[in-house]
Image (cartoon, rainbow, N blue to C red; front, side, top):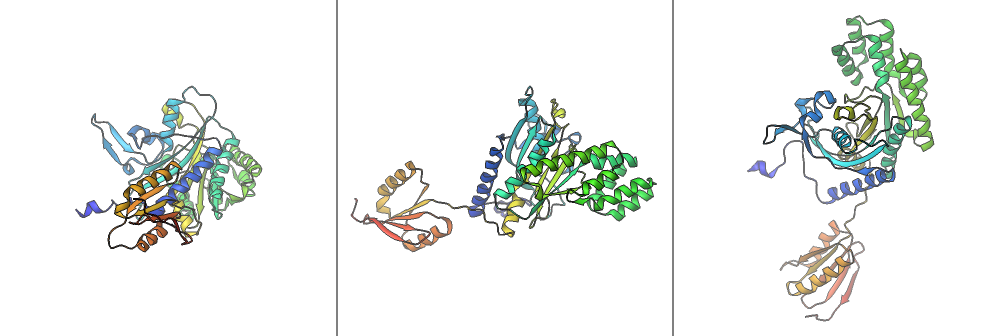
Length: 417
């Protein structure tokens, strides 16, 4: 019985003011998506296992919530919405030649034992731009993220931007096999450059490659670090990756959004489907990146459509935590009218509520309990509402109380029975 009264580990109930603020935040972000021309899409909460199989490049199978349908097909709760949107776009927009802009809100699920203290169910909002392989498209996505965050009042944040092609150029130049590559990625993701040096020494990697990997620790900063990264690039792939970042930066300057961008050439991407620029958003009050995105030019091919694409997600739960800790207020007010009535005045209360609702005023009805004072309802209203409380007493007198100012005003005093 006790289990029925609690949620499983990693999930929680969201209610009252917190829920209202979360929904208000989502509406504000959605408005920015729409201002940039993105169209809403909803995809299923669960998909066939193949949508998230290893070849797609998402999270490991062991971290998926898996179950079976009546026909024996393996299904999974989505851990990542991008592959779902890619599948839908390949199916629904198969013949579309022009760029496709889609945005969404949904929950993702990751069954990961290392997520102790973190939610296993998260709400994500994201946008995907499909059918455009340009640097301008990359810059648009970064500018969209930045406008989303500044529009809700967040000021202290940064987007770390890298390019997986640059990192891959170092891997190829060092001639690392798959196992060695995975080890180097792990060490660099943990910023353990001493470990990288020791490991590369142990497998006898050439000196120039070791120096290039060691330099990644310092290739983090403003646009000025791109010139140095270009000089270190071991081949044309690395050079082209830097040129791409330089062009993106030039476009971001036109947007006026460049101040929030930090370049980090050590970034290699969490998901295997990334192919070009990748970016992560960080701010105070979160334990991890709360914005995750990148280019994935070959993902839609897995579902039958060739289409260069880029997208991102904002982890709403992490963003809510950051806003609370930074004391950035998400304005949410329940401007409801609360009608409290004595039992004898049900008819008047219902008629009044109907009139208010016809005028698009949110109205809640509460029958006054015997033994409770109207002051009890006023205190309740002050905690949860920012509108008016209207009290209809047994004599038909109607009093309006402003829950913000406390002002009382009798608006009808005769017996209406």
